[in-house]
Image (cartoon, rainbow, N blue to C red; front, side, top):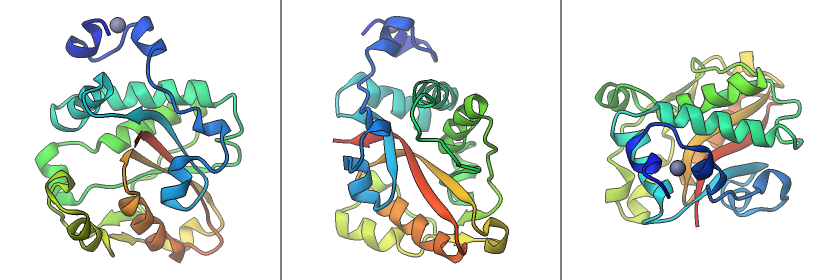
Length: 204
Ligand SMILES: [Zn+2]
């Protein structure tokens, strides 16, 4: 990887080519679907000590959310030639708790969603799903603590407005899938709605 990975917010053409793609948009029963329990695809594999880990870290913790926008855009450019986005009407990024949002200043998943939206023309909605429980950073918790903290972590406002919509839910990184499953559970209140999941990265 060239210095573009480390220094710049954007990747050079060569680094974009070498991203560890999952190709899950064309794979049924892929490893992301297995953990979230619905139609899903991740764009990249996430591995410790790989340059992608640095990218994600900078996007989330180093005030560089534009990385999310550019990777979301790149993912959509490649995936629009599959049927993955077909019939999706709305993109909802996994929200942060208001307190976390204040601390960080931005929601990286919203940036990813806006990148996808720019390519696909599908609108982004950030008004219907809320994170109602403030949880500690997941990296510092055990699996059991994490499971308890994400249970009932989300609420849906005016679920009737999402009646029968096909919604793409966007997250930055799927590991155990618990956060996404918790969000999907809250969204069951949207009668007749259909859900597809996009993750920027899937941990191997
Ligand atoms: Zn490069």
